[in-house]
Image (cartoon, rainbow over all chains, first blue to last red; front, top):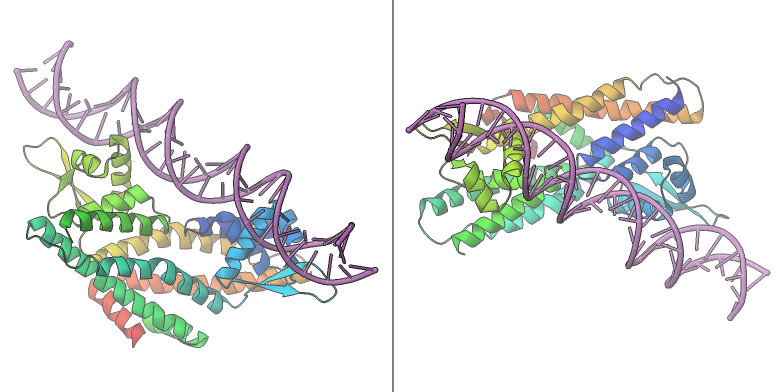
Length: 166
Length: 166
DNA sequence: GAGTGTGTTTAAATTTTTTTGAAAACTACG
DNA sequence: CGTAGTTTTCAAAAAAATTTAAACACACTC
């Protein structure tokens, strides 16, 4: 397959995957583009490669930096800002896990802990309490697991995956 | 806290969590409602509790059944269909993992395997090949891990989570 | 086989999310 | 300073996703 075609397919696929994970398509596509680029790219490069506006590029690059998936670089003698993707897959995964945990799991845990003591002794209230406990237990377990996964060093992540496989 | 308030908060929270996971808000809310309900509910119940239309309820219930998170039940003597949520959290998680793996990870792996042999020996092509290999390796590992997780029995899932925590 | 209650489908309306484009705000340099 | 190159912001436009409402289908009853 030609490089240009393969590149396009990868960028498309990454974008699709991203959007089913609550990450917007363009953000994922910029990430893909930077991932496969051997050199740092500036905003213009990204705009023209993906045919997106300056504002769009800027916002999504910022989001990617928030997630720790992309870094800004200054080249001496150049006014423009350049961008590089984090290329170590382990780090990529860890950063994504950390961010999602913080944004989704933790707020959920906060809400759940506020729902454990419900008034009334109707069957509805009883079932509610039971379900909330279950969900809470499970979420706490997931939280602890992910916390360990992300705090440990990169090699540990992969070895623990293997351990699960057994 | 009053039951009604807690219930509402939980349904809201579950809906929000769902939408950051690519599951639509209403689908997640119906799931939440059924999860905490001690009795089977029919379409009317769901429509009035969540203030949604019949069509909306119908479509999202069907999606939930696709995911194996909700089951249809017929009551003898009743014309209406009743719905119950799968309440075992382990099963819930397993079904979600299985579905997402099938819908997202597997198509990605297919695409990646079609991108391993790229023509040309430019630095771009070289970097591309390298990144694709990395992503592929990682995805395969994730796929294998999840496969084991879902095939094993329910208790195994929880114990393997503990093992990861160590 | 007309009538009623229920489930299903889908085009159109609505809502939400994303993207654009242009103005404003920086920044480095003369 | 003033200006040219660049990034940032944000209101408005466009696109995408969701929801509704109304038509349709089906099964059962009288």
